[in-house]
Length: 158
Image (cartoon, rainbow, N blue to C red):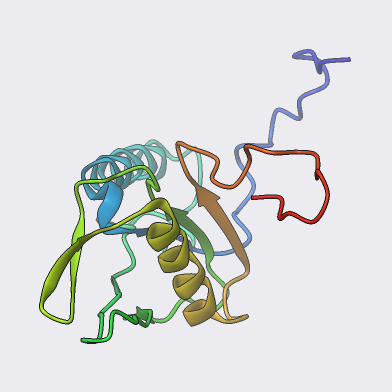
């Protein structure tokens, strides 16, 4: 049964967040990620100015983007680096695994990033975060590795 307006706590949007908000935007969806950060910055600043919520540590900021780096070696391997502290933050990671317009160099050749490459970048970022963030949420327009729900014999479920 869906909740009605009577079931919703009227102070639900007045409670302080558990951790500071941070958005990690991978290059595959950078334009949308910047728009989301700008919207959140404007919306949260308006709430603080209007007095509907107090300005908790890091609540209203000019930018919510967390810089990351995913450098590749000449062998094609990569590593993930988070460029600022995220200890105790609520992190949202945005990526588009179906962005075929991205490339990387391997052994001097230009390679198109496949959905597997994008997914590996996601796993690298999560690995770089370690267990420092309060919560990690992933936003992907396409749910990767969700095409098969039953196994037929000895095969993987991706």
